[in-house]
Image 1 (cartoon, helix red, strand yellow):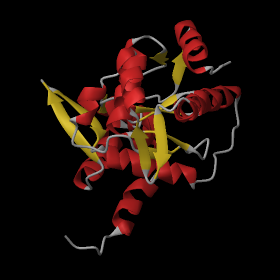
Image 2: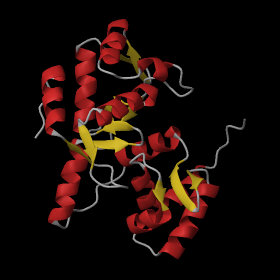
Image 3: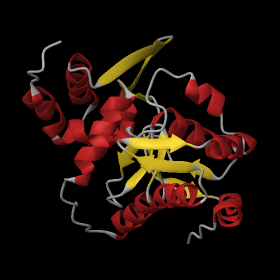
Image 4: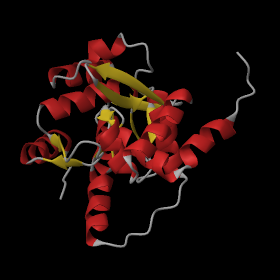
Length: 230
């Protein structure tokens, strides 16, 4: 495998504003239809189709078929990891409306980063896990301690399934709003899936990354991990 990679090719795909908006929508972790992505990118359906073809050909997005319908999702967790990292070095957009301000607040508090949690809550969970000796930080990721494996498994997290995944187990992902790491990888995905299944968070809308914390989620976060949320 060559070490001479064409960074400019990926950069050109991401740099176009409509495609960037579509990729951001796909960071919700959901598979979205072309129409939903057209709305996310602020373009017509015919224009969105061309952009999506380029993203698929460039290896950033994959398409699946369900009957007559096509759905798009990020091609891999590595694509999501790269996009989140780019967010950490990108300038913030100016906020020009109350709606933008509320969306920004929601995104900062809790959101999905592909298939794992991000935002203030996710970073706070990592801090709590390290303090409680559930995770040990080091290198490019985290190590799950034996006691931590038992604790998370009792909470319903599919630790065993995460261990058998072919992807990185407990990866560190730089949170673009907090500039600190949150938990990614197979374990991060399992944790996110369980908190959604338990009703700690609910998705605000298809194609939107921001999560709403439920009353049950606030209670569990406070009682289990001493994390208070607004």
